Amino acid sequence: MTDPVAPTPEPARLVVLVSGSGSNLQALLDACQDPAYGAQVVAVGADRDGIAGLDRAAAAGVPTFVHKVKDYPERADWDRALTASVGLYRPDLVVSAGFLKLVGDDFLAAFGDRYINTHNALLPAFPGIHGPRDALEYGVKVAGATLFFVDGGVDTGPIISQVVVPVEDDDTEESLTERIKEVERRQLVDWVGRLVRDGWTITGRKVRLK
Image 1 (tube, rainbow, N blue to C red):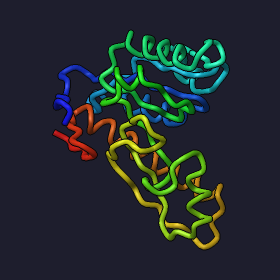
Image 2 (image 1 turned 45 degrees about the vertical axis):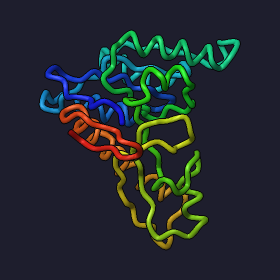
Image 3 (image 1 turned 30 degrees about the vertical axis):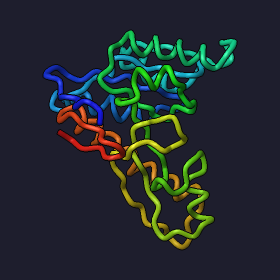
Image 4 (image 1 turned 180 degrees about the vertical axis):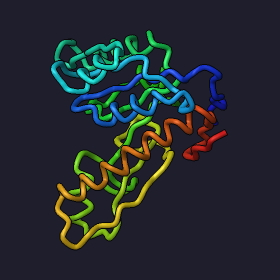
């Protein structure tokens, strides 16, 4: 059992990691405009330059940093650099918002009980990068999105929340993916707020609000 993580009286500090358009980042930035939400995005990190997510952060006046894997001799060196940059901003919660890189041991040692990710399937079913496609191919009647704490596996960490999306008879991978994205974004914003306002505990695989 991890030590309970208590809510903070000041707005919780969020570091958001992105690799692309940053639509989930934008949803969090918008939510943080309401003081009652209880959080603020204090930095945005990325694994590549020239992406819209960094532009969104800049437009909001949020500091950014970039660490490209190819710029480091070993993956572990990249992981240590990413860990150090995130740590500079003393985050209460680190949010993967479309961040397409798996973090390593150093990062998880520093932030493993406060690093969350979202996946476009109902885990433990259909992990990996093709959740909606794999769900359709399997013939499931419901799909959805899962919010979870990241561990050393691929989409295997303790589950925070899940939301269900019905699969329609005429769904394609693209149509199902888009419908999942809508509820996935709402779930992310809702539960980030709940976590930072209430605090949380992780006992084994059980995540509970305080």
